Length: 339
Image: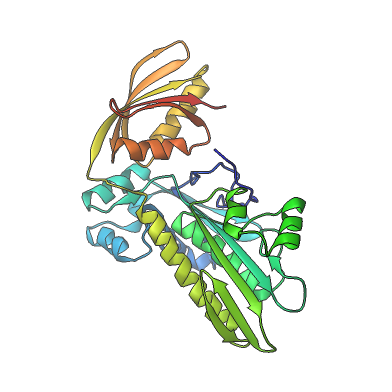
């Protein structure tokens, strides 16, 4: 698999995992705290975020379906504590994976596993005052740059998806600068990045008080209303793109399967604990039993929600497990534990 360049975002979203990204700490939500008297509100908001992430749907209908079934938000919380991140206060809320998944199954709400899509945003900006530039993680030159980045971070956290901007090296910058008219942007970035979808947007000031936007979003606007119009169209387009990608990743929770898993390179008890914990944390995993073990290899039987293919997808995107062999006919998966 190829690797994608990106920077580290402290709340996991922009992480340095390899493509086919696993959303680390799927069942942990960091919710901003506005004030000490509003902890309860932060708890409620964190539950809403958790349901959005797990269902892949940002409609409140699933939240009310769960609440109306006689559950309170706190029923699904294991623990919570206050954390300071970049001088801001957050409520770190840990949710009960098994209880949430069983409730989704009871209410026939489809869910999405740890494996989450990557959307790369290639946004070229020409303000007419300086050289055009591609928006990247490391540079912000205008108000719209900051708003785009803030939106991507917040949405990535709430939806449980990777929304990324490129990080250019010197060679990339020179190629794009010198040959931008000759390079097909999609082909250029296909060779250098891995993603599930590439969004290309070209923003240019075409007059004293007029802006033009082309690419996946197209419109013209005057200087005064440009940022508001752009952010409205950008968020709508991005949400539709996210919905489409997440719908393709839904696990059929009404379906149950038995899968055989072999994990090699287990040399210590710590290796066993870590590797087993990874399997147990998968959204599709219901129950796990050891069939046998020998030397440095453990054989498991795994009871899962969904089908064999959905499990393979979840596991193949984990950083600590390498897929060695996949046997579709016998629903068997051979893995190696990476330390």
